[in-house]
Image (cartoon, rainbow, N blue to C red; front, side, top):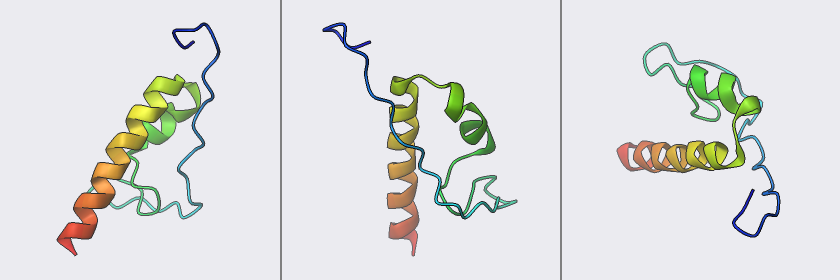
Length: 67
């Protein structure tokens, strides 16, 4: 719940439907989540999901700058 007592909407899954785990990074090549993040997504709170999305944005930025 938010501070005002309203339920917070849950973020949408970042899944792109390209589910292929990279054996070296142990992350999905589609959405860049780890197996733990994928497994935990459905039971995670809205705040935990937002935290995962922040980490994914950082991973994408790092991957783009490395290219």
